[in-house]
Length: 416
Figure 1 (cartoon, one colour):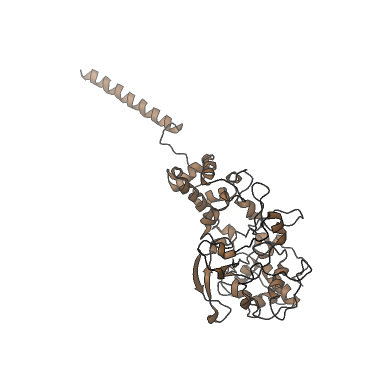
Figure 2 (spheres, one colour):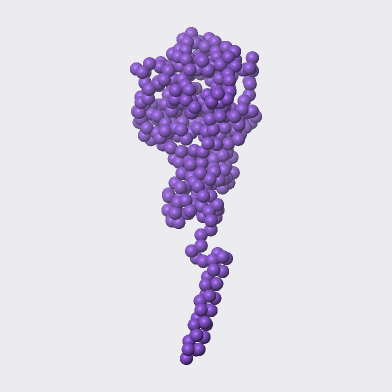
């Protein structure tokens, strides 16, 4: 009897060992229904980096975020038009649709505060001239509060990436098993159960990628100067331009200075909204087919804004990398940075810059006339040609180190 019990125990133990061995083999081969593959992307930012460059998120699989915000060219759309110049407006995924606004750089965009109404003390003007109004947000009209809101716009925009709806975008995400596993790891196993949640997770991930130092390295000559790693030649045009820029003679810093002068992370924008009298880009309008009576309402296109006094106002852009992010203004109407400075100066009553150097004729009227901020534009003193070149030379020193080779002299020698 004892011997039989012992044999039974041995046989039972052998069965248990065999069963456990089978379970272990199944797990090793992925046979367990509870097995979840290790995620390819373990942070939202690394997932966002892949999504940022994924052309499969556009209808015809030809366009990604990086198409219009190229990391190799200061995060702008550097595709060339028929004249071999960087296009003023971007072509959509369908190969023919054209926007009406220039694609702004995504560099340093993470520093723009969420869109809100408020006030701020200006550093270069008396305190009784503080700004009160709309501040921050994304896009030129601030219609999206933050980066994830901005990232969610292009995929379903019919003249950009062209996807018909959010569900279609989510289906494209689900084609990629690396995405599926990573989304579940980062956002939970049920993330794909709801289209809106999955789409929002995609946008958030891209936004997290755009917060990385790659987008805002703060390593320009100006930054290196603040760290004691670069010296402006005292006799150079850039040095003269720096002095002019931060002085009350030019009024530049009123809208393009956020921090104290010696702050190591100056963004060179106040994130304020102003109508500076930019004319229509007639060439772009001819190509994109907007009707003759179309008007870019600027800030008034923001759903949170209803006052007609805000019509035509545009968010002040950063001057970081401005020397390599042509063409300029919200509609790309000017090709040369020198032209932009002359345009600003032409509002001054004593200005000699009455002719647009790119057209050879007088500056055209503002697209939106009634809200032009002439009080700000007419401040300071009129600029000489030397002043303008000096300011351009200083702004060239705001270029990230990796993009310095992209600077074109365009007739201005800054080292003379």
